[in-house]
Image: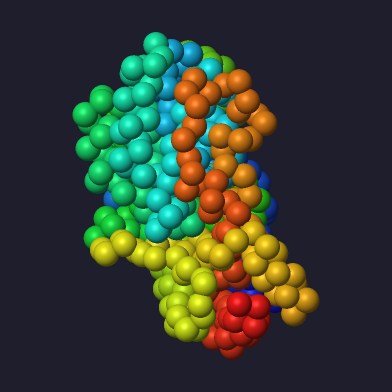
Length: 375
Ligand SMILES: *Cc1c(COP(=O)(O)O)cnc(C)c1O
């Protein structure tokens, strides 16, 4: 069994993907061009954002947003304690200071009340300026963007939506990657919309930031790339990857539905199993189901479940083992001591199960049977 079945996806769409790749290779234009422009227009339309700027990966996308806002050494950036490393890594990359905020067990996303408490602490205990909140849509479930927006407005902060896993999710009729002042996503192969290597995108409604970001992704170019008006990066999306993504967008909505179906199969099969918590979805929220992550009773039980699934040929993943505030890379960089008991607890109990639009009901049943055998 595959954890996220990208081979089946390719097999089912082989001809279209092969043709798109061959067209780029035989066309002789490997950077930029029609495929990239077409993809950017399409993604902006899908998300409902005015602008989409493609780039090399989801980490660069986050860093570029902070660069566009000139976030630097005097600034505090609030990041959920339970997320992939990138969400926080980019903060010291621009010289700013990360403040890790605890999450809610029910959605794995940043807890708005604790966010406000963290902002107050920074204001009272440090000389830093609260500047940005990174709102991560973890595992595909959109963050509580309305509550986060209210806090950001109150303290004059920007919202940076990290939609690397959230792309394709919704709150009401509004798509993920439209909630930030700037929003970002990743096209790493295993993300909801993945390419065949690295890729990323940035979304915004702001014309000035759009212009600036388009410059920053190509060495801070002015009139052309040999006229340099900013210190930027080399962070372009390859034409080949754009061509692949254009094909995958044709069936993306269907895939999201397939993942949601698999999630329902899991929910139903695990309903009767004791001592297990299935991932919930808030009313009016739609997950893109980047991951299906359960919570077990404790670390020992989790290890037993992992071992038994492994013995049955079923792969799992622990996203994430370690709270951000405990990562060695952030040692000595945090201005206030983190207060994140929920994250510390769920890091010991979380387990992500195989999920894709290609997993079958039989496979889900088999997985759940192994799990219920342990509990
Ligand atoms: C994957 C991921 C990123 C980084 O994306 P890359 O394309 O791998 O650089 C950032 N944030 C979150 C939450 C992610 O899951």
